[in-house]
Image (cartoon, rainbow, N blue to C red; front, side, top):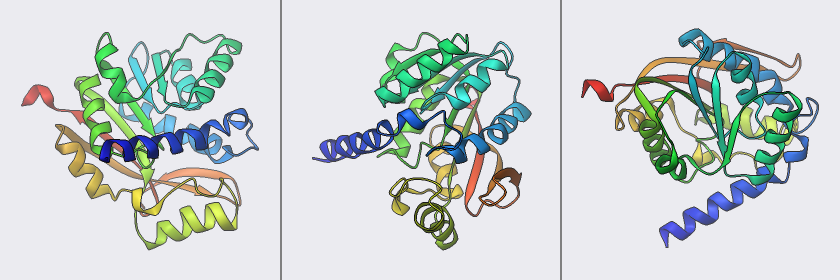
Length: 240
């Protein structure tokens, strides 16, 4: 029953994003906050590791916004997502942009047995709060990451402030993103994320806030992790 419930939950999340796939690359559409956040996310990743000629896996790639940005930095990128319409949009846009990106319709867990080699860098942005088991996602990421490799996660904190700003404010008041995008109970506090990662021998290296200003439509890194935050982990499996 538990497996069935998790599958149903994931199917619901996939359907939610698949229905909006046609708007993904519209900077004024349903995903316009991601278009503002993406340069900041990319800069954070590039600040903490070299991207050129690295094998990078983008888990939960959606329509390929970050995936393409990583490829433009000279990385060899693979993008995976469970939403078929999103992956199709990503493939078409990469073709139009003349970028060589390997896109697959699968979850991180499904990708583990078919991956040919471990990755130097894994990015997982705005996904972990949507999966039924963050622990399983982190386990798969650790298996796909080479020893000493880098994992980057962006997500939303769980507290009253994040509920008011990221859910009530963003979804219902300002209508920055579609209603129902986030469920409060699924959000992870930084300490919870760090504990789950530590169980997979993933060591937290940095934690930074990711602030989005809906009025100026701008974003920046900060020391405030109270709402959106970015986390950088390294795979310490070799040291075990």
